[in-house]
Length: 391
Image (cartoon, rainbow, N blue to C red):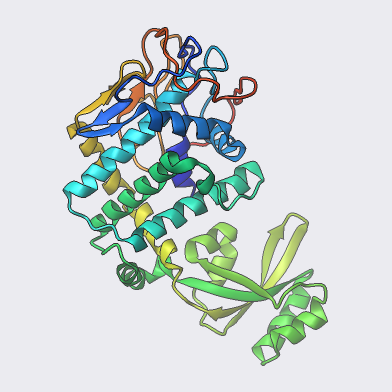
């Protein structure tokens, strides 16, 4: 679910402007931003900034989602970099706008739908941490504090609701299951068992034994005694099988449940191997997986709906944080891939996948501090080569 984290975590390149201050926590400002009558308070923004800049796992996600360098700190340890603050505030505004669009359309969002959205975000963070940072933290969302965590989950929930509307599917378990049955070619999984062998000749022997009724456990004991488990290899959609190996997808998808296929040549890090597979069942993927399919298929539709909401919305940003603009960013696209701001002496903007963003102030406001002493440690700058383009 990289499409989620690249949208929500894409940071602009580092700004040369910073938010300067006198060392005291100024909280007199009545708002950080307003979306119609909805207010994002400075305290909400400060809380999100503090969590985002002090959680090591989240730092890693930010670093690997960035298309350029970034700074957390401003001119000193008591200030945040203005570009970083603009990025976080932009995401909070996006969340408010998306929710207003859903409310205007009178779309229902049940507790079940909320739980599914949380599962999507948890899965996205977990997958990105494992692939990009080499760490495993299944509860990262719970560590981000209510303001930041709720913004991620609520935005996911609202996008799910808009995607389900575009697909003409109720955002319920029954509705998603109906969608899966109607789109079996993409939502049905092939559950596989099998074993890997060193030669194609041995693979042919094993395939014949299985085709003539030998049990997989007996074949494993004789031809792959070092194998762990019972030979179960997992369940995969057609797209997932293709990403693993087009040859495996070509052999598995047309085969009936109970069939044996192979030996199939399979390249691995230790060299070429040959795999013999049995198709044990063909269930539909879990409901959250089906919801992901709807999300991805209808991302253009829900992105357009939110972008239209941004154009209609009365959005105000406190000038001490920056200004709101709907000018096209220099790169990127709407929907599941956030666009990136540009660096330079004029500062850089926050990112938004929906056509609007907070741009940092054109000058350096004096006597204003976002959250003094919240950022600990030295300045952190990500290498310019890090990041992803979305997907």
